[in-house]
Length: 129
Picture 1 (cartoon, helix red, strand yellow):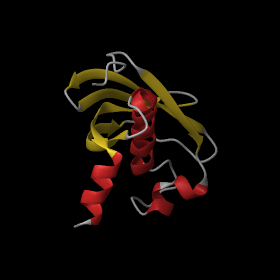
Picture 2 (picture 1 turned 45 degrees about the vertical axis):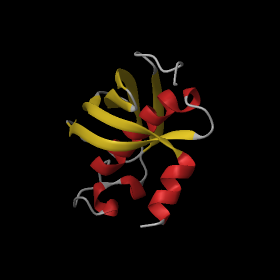
Picture 3 (picture 1 turned 60 degrees about the horizontal axis):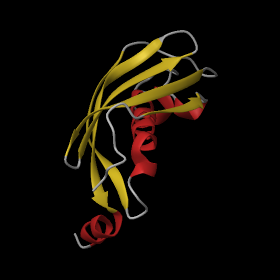
C-alpha cells in the first residue's frame, strides 16, 4: 500500500534557538538553554518530513513513542538541527533513528516511532471522543 516507503529515507529539520525555545521559557527547567521538549519536537518533525510525501494526500503519521537522551546543552542564538532516518517498517508502524546537533556537537539521540493514519478517519475518531 505504501510502496514508496523504504528503509533509509531521511530528512532534516532545523531552527535557531530563541529565548522562547529555552527550558526556562517553556517551563521544563530553570535555565536559558534549548528545551528538551523542543529538541524532541524537532526530531519528530524530521521524521515526519522523511516520509510525509511518500504516503499520499489522505495519509499522515502520528508520533506514538519517543525514547531520546538530551546529552548536551545549547545556548540561545545557536542553530540546531535534527536528522531522522527510517530504520524499520512494520506494516503501518515506522521506527526512526533520530539525532540532534547544534553548531558544535551532537546534543541528542535516540529512537522515535510513528504510525501511519488516514487523516479523515483519525480526525473523525478524535473529534468523536
